Length: 204
Image (tube, rainbow, N blue to C red):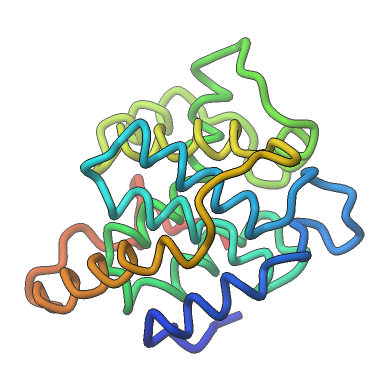
């Protein structure tokens, strides 16, 4: 399924606001916080761990909007979100969003004691399971490996019920700066494309 690209920060902010009260599974059997709360927690964790990387913070904020765009598509939600924001926030943000599922597969393969939420553990199988050694090596050599892992670790940690974090509106300046930076660079200066994240098309 394809989506109309998100063309403005106002539209993106509206979509994020609409994620309040929307969960990663339509029947609310998944993670214990809604998509907006989760995104705000992940972005806050990335602001603490990568304070100079606003693109990673923006990716953390929007990484799960695919659950809202296409409810129930566990395997493809990262790609749906990445496709929706790439034109506005740029290829690096889109790539980090799309990589949050492969990063889980990488960590599942390389950290045997990895602690996943029950929902993340359940969906790992339909998302491809732990990476093979060859996939893991290719992933580790790919672009933005460190940022992708930071986002994934924040993703796993940002599921605390009742945690108080920065409100959505406080992220508008960050999104505006990221969007403006992408607009200044333009398509001729785009870096590694989202497709072919580690030698094959992203999960759909």
